[in-house]
Length: 483
Ligand SMILES: CC(=O)N[C@H]1[C@@H](OP(=O)(O)OP(=O)(O)OC[C@H]2O[C@@H](n3ccc(=O)[nH]c3=O)[C@H](O)[C@@H]2O)O[C@H](CO)[C@@H](O)[C@@H]1O[C@H](C)C(=O)N[C@@H](C)C(=O)N[C@H](CCC(=O)O)C(=O)O
Ligand SMILES: Nc1ncnc2c1ncn2[C@@H]1O[C@H](COP(=O)(O)OP(=O)(O)OP(=O)(O)O)[C@@H](O)[C@H]1O
Image 1 (tube, rainbow, N blue to C red):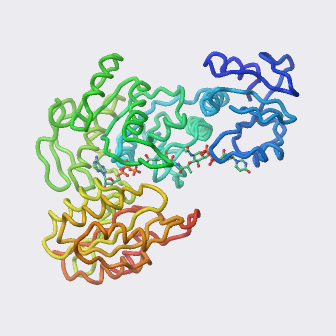
Image 2: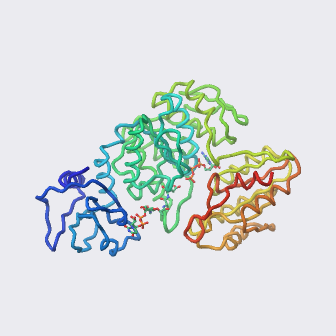
Image 3: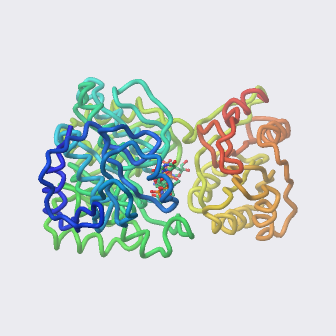
């Protein structure tokens, strides 16, 4: 429940309130008491006591004609029969009103927030596993892959970072479910679209930055992408950052200028990985010792070190960190299957050039025989990945590639494949049916020297086609059927 009076106070304090526009007149205050029992940004879900937020690129005036709500919040006066609370920024307004409506759940949880181009989901699962060791399983998780609000029942996430209204409702649910901690990924889009406006995180982690998510629907430039991600810094009480990441200088400068307590990891800092082999690694610094994780790849050891430092700041002991990392399972990240002939199948969520390069390098090091790869790229987003993928293939001549479908959306998978292939000087096969492509690749293996790399979808069990998520068996099941 929230009163209109309280809403106006919040908006005025945030310098976001313009006026209430009603029947051709403008008001700075509203003298009748109005109470809202619900908040919504979907006109189809409004009732007589809902406060409605008119927001979004695809918002249409006609949605307001079917509205059951008595008031709406908007940046634009649609001059309808119901009063409009006009604001300068509707998404900021929604975030602050939702926080008050749900009684500030963010203050009742210790929150670990992760950003970076790559490694957020992996680190989030590491973080949850460590914090669960500390608090007996009372860690909620909001990740690209899955969400849990009670610590053990998971559901598929819609977005990496939910819309503010949904996010605050989820936080309130987590509190209600007795959770003491929350681990969440914060995407650059979350800052760009004010999904986390007004939130301060107990610990923020910045893993890395690579050019990605640059395009018409995401960020116009790398500067915009990086700036949005960097907002996590000023909204964290304690910060962990990768000393090896590109543009580290400005992170350091900003942390010092804002006097935010922090720790760095990676070469050049006090927290480093001193030895590494397979699934085992040794660290020196604030969290020093020997660790094991269930994922291959140096980058996953870096994710583990970052998370170790972050969870230590939240009170985790070295033993809890060690046990958490050892037990953490991350769905769709470096999942390893073994075919009956001994060949290894690697299923990994790598879906940009840098991740693909890392993945291929790891697998190449472990296999001397045939290296097959089943690869597609997304349609209507991340278009630059096609060129990057082509170049990775070109630089690894051992790869035998079957190009296929990966969330082609409104584009033709064949055209996407052709764009990838245009970067490569050798011939690449194309098989539109992803499960069939996986089966073909596995069939081509002979023994344990061989490997099949299946990047892109991780644990996703859908194909985004023509704007809809169509059911897909999933890479793991498709591979298992062919083992
Ligand atoms: C740019 C952006 O933030 N987009 C998100 C945003 O869309 P939007 O606010 O522009 O709203 P819209 O989809 O144009 O729809 C207009 C509004 O009309 C409403 N509506 C619609 C129909 C109707 O009858 N009545 C009605 O009221 C809808 O509820 C909506 O509020 O709010 C929608 C939910 O309300 C999200 O689905 C949508 O995510 C888009 C589809 C998306 O996929 N975004 C990606 C790029 C994204 O955010 N990705 C990052 C991860 C990136 C990374 O890995 O770093 C993420 O955090 O997930
Ligand atoms: N620190 C890292 N540096 C580079 N690549 C990484 C790193 N961590 C993971 N990866 C690669 O990126 C893929 C995606 O990892 P993960 O899902 O943890 O990242 P993410 O930040 O959540 O990604 P996305 O934003 O694309 O959902 C992994 O499957 C792995 O191949």
